[in-house]
Length: 545
Image (cartoon, rainbow, N blue to C red; front, side):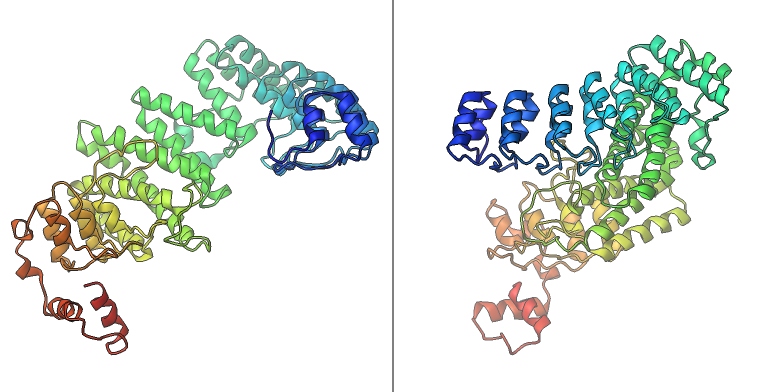
């Protein structure tokens, strides 16, 4: 295995050459030498379980507490790989059992994850605590999520570590882990947990704020209700999901995956309302607990947008689409909120290339564009009140004037040949869109914004194989300049000429050429000095021509 920055001692360690390790150390090799990923010979030996090499390195001054960029220590590495003898040795020489990774996980979390009961026993015997990680997941819940029955069974015997409520939650979660493939096992653990709840009088707390969520989704909270779902595949799946939501929380990766899968299952069966209620509820809770610009929230924003376009818009009766108007508007307003925060982030610098990820507003703008496109499909059947709400929401987004990393504006997106919600997926609907263009112009959008290359929407239009005349007229009617040039000196006319089309074949240029444009073009053509002579705004106007 190659590791950048690895020393001969590191290489000898990973090859398990004990004699070479001793020889190199005797010749002065640095036992704490770091690779580029913050790996040392000791971290390698611990992760591979080379106990003899671990002892030699430690006896020669190896740092027990060195961590990688994720905060993972040597003890955690040994525990995560199930090397209980290495774990026991490290603890005997003073390894810190209370260290936490950057995500809050401890060595006990790692030991549980390995599935090695011996590691778990060693850690507990050395007073490891049942501390939750940053997502609130305790080691016993980790064991339940992974289906490690033997570890859960051992931990629940430790009444000094596990409360009765934690024990019950772990058993319920363990049942949910088996629900998909082993229904009988799932029911066994759920019934055991229910029995313990009744015996110790620990009821399941109901959240009244989940209405209308509870209209479709209800957890079995009494023995008769639990008996009723036995043998019912759909009811078991729903109960499993609700247990994960209650025990792990909606921000947990396991819950998110389960929610997404259940929603997709509903959508595949044509149960769109159930899917939308489930995902919208999740999005709403994520908004409260995670805040904006969070990848988990963005994921549901995108999924719901795809759902509306792929399924809702295809409903046979257009009036049925109105049932989802509030949901679409909530999504659009969510996007606007994300963008509002995103454009104020100090690292956003149009013109600087950067990797697009969920944390940046660049990925949210295309989602907003698709939602606007969906709203334009609804406009003909909206009441005046709802129509006004749409116009107000679009105007608010236009006022923010969001730009992506290359300075591309909403108007540029409206003219793009395709707008992606994901880099790996084709667009849901093709662009350019005259309806979206008009919606943006009605909201006060500038008809001639320039990106980092000086291109306006007209330049984007000029590069198309075929120019839609109605869209060109709409843009020109809003005040776009035919003769405005980009940074390479190209105008709409020159771009069409390069494709063998004269401007007069598309539009009468005289109708859309102002006296100011003629004056600016003349100044540039005759090289008349104007810098420092004209007002700054007029200077920029001349520059563009």
